Length: 299
Image 1 (cartoon, rainbow, N blue to C red):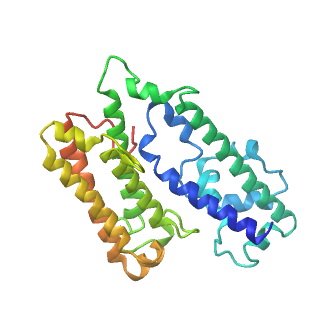
Image 2 (cartoon, rainbow, N blue to C red):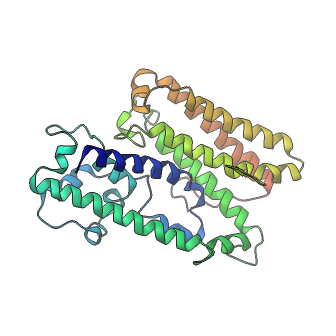
Image 3 (tube, one colour):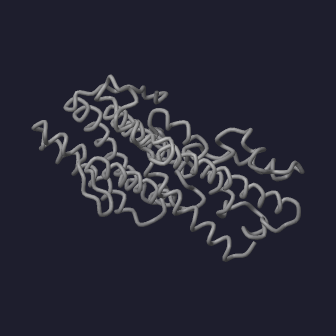
């Protein structure tokens, strides 16, 4: 291992994690199962990971696949390849120090292999050259319900939005206790928490407006306008912008802001909660849809 190699691995993780956040609203129907190992919500079980590294049992993808989601996935890889603040040797040295170093390298390779395999499965599932779930989603999982695809997408948007607000904002703010928890930020080792949150809201806006990159298509705002609800469409669009502006106002990593300027993170949370209210009440009502998940289990 080299410093340059480790830096390249970290850069690759950052790019992948940011893009992965944009897929959160698309964990739809039968395609949901393909997201399980990549899912970025579960904090890694650090003690268990270090215990595995300390053992002599060879670590590979098949072995760690027998463990839970807090032992694999993007957040586990983040812990392994960024400076966790652990005492002792520096980060690179932890990959070169004898048997534990070899085990740590093998763990990184195993997690990366699982991510690559699951990403390939996900691509094959959605691709027109594969299972073409894209077409299945467009025509609806249930052909007898022409509104099912819209309902699936809007419900997953709402579920993922509430999940981000709860896990990425409310819990780090202390879950109403008044005691902030910097350790609970989405990406504590890489310092990428706020960019990840921003990436999610950018994806939400892209779905809502139908605009992504050079593509300017039809979105939910156009659907609302067709229902004579252009004012609501503009209000929701403005609220998404308000969330992004609140994120952009924070100039330090999220964990630092929680300790030094927690009111800035509270401002993001407040704007995001206002967006939840608009979408969960006004949007759902105007589109004539029904919320099909509960706050506790997301089903």
